[in-house]
Amino acid sequence: MGERIAVFGAGYAGLVTAAGFADLGHQVVVRDVVPEKVDALRAGRVPFHEPGLEEVIARVGDRLRFTLDYQEAVEGARFVFVCVGTPATYSGDADLSAVWTVLDELRDLADGAVVVMKSTVPVGTGDTVRAALDARGLTHIGYVSNPEFLAEGSAVKDFLEPDRIVIGSFQEADGDAVERLHDGLDAPSVRTDVPSAEMVKLAANAYLGTRISFINEIANVCELVGADVETVAWGMGLDSRIGTRYLQAGIGFGGSCFPKDISFLKLLAGNSGYHFQLLNSVIEVNELQKRRVVSKLQKHLGSLRGKTIALLGLAFKANTDDMREAPSIVLASRLLAEGADVRTWDPVADASSILRGVTFAETVLEAVRDADAAVVVTGWDELRDLPRAEIRDAMRVPLIVDGRNVVDPGAARSAGFTYEGIGRASTSPLAGLPETDEPAIAEHSPEA
Ligand SMILES: NC(=O)c1ccc[n+]([C@@H]2O[C@H](COP(=O)([O-])OP(=O)(O)OC[C@H]3O[C@@H](n4cnc5c(N)ncnc54)[C@H](O)[C@@H]3O)[C@@H](O)[C@H]2O)c1
Image 1 (spheres, rainbow, N blue to C red):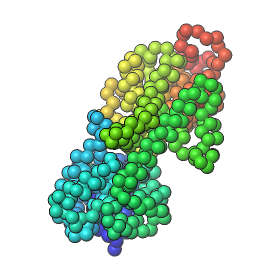
Image 2: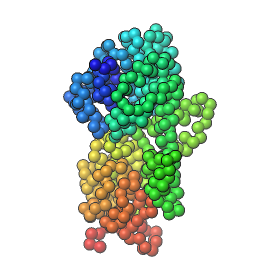
Image 3: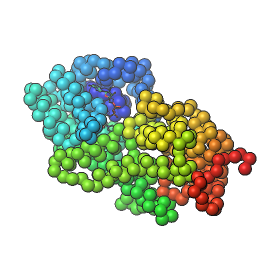
Image 4: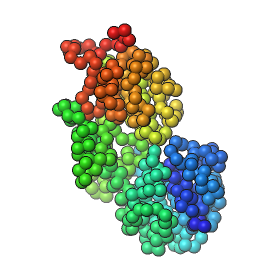
């Protein structure tokens, strides 16, 4: 029969959690505040792009239900998972208003019910929530921190095959109960106190962001000294002390988690009297990395005024439609500021309400037609074969700036493209021409 679980928030984290627990045999009711979302979910449609999620929702049948009514969600629930958004405020601190709204709705919980915080929150939030619950006379309600580590694009697999399950509790019995909910998953549990569980989440994301900024700086040095960052990262990563993942050089990280979680940790440290020097650099390197693409384009095209630049991929990474903190947003606005015409394409992300002044193309071919450069912004698989004759012939200037190193430079060169990656030697079909002050490559002429 499973346990009765309420999940508040039908976003990437909440919906995957809900579907995952239903798949493990529990009875789950998801509550959200957006009527269109709930309508779509009731009709079996997932309102965002997450591979495999619709299939899980279909197979769990009526073990997973959706509602707008918080009372319906909490009625009879033994566990209430809080999965609402915790975006950064303008100051970079966590905006916990949605979390507090949910907590205000939890007055009718049964004895022994447990509130489980999945949303990413600053360390200390659990203590504050515990005190607030106690002050409201809800001392019989347990509280557990159970941070979520899923990555968008592989979220279903991450739920069903987690590396670990982190459970921080005030009462051991509450932690035991939450641990039992995961029966059927093959993963070690890390049982700890609430602040340590909260810190695991922030530290893990800050560390992953640090690796990305680190390899991006290595890439930038590689460009200056003639080394290839792809080989360097592989050679480093095969060291079992290091590992190969999250060592992919590119145009910087984005998304709804890394930027804000790193900011939360930096400010948490600052507010607690510690200056987290390293994280300042991680953030600064990441900001600068997004802008380096502009100088790569200028290196080849000179002034970008009046040039047409195709941005291929808009989502913050492949296999998601999430535009939150996507590097494409910074890049598009920098290019517009330089006077370029910006064309964009993405297979799933809808950025029409976010990006102003750009043109949206339906296909890669439409995006690159008569363009002076194609910039790979998101590492979509379908961009790996970008260097093909059809694309080259459509472009005014056959220039690829590969912000994700997904294109094979050799293939680009032999297909007649000038290629510029991140931390790799640039290749050009026109290499060897004497340097001039003019843009380094001529307009493409199919006859030439
Ligand atoms: N997206 C990820 O990859 C990921 C991974 C790990 C952790 N997290 C964390 O999980 C939390 C949620 O992130 P997300 O990406 O799923 O956010 P999201 O914005 O996709 O989803 C949040 C959902 O909560 C709903 N909501 C807002 N107020 C509500 C309320 N009072 N009651 C019920 N629902 C309400 C919103 O309508 C929205 O559907 C954040 O703290 C995030 O840091 C996210």
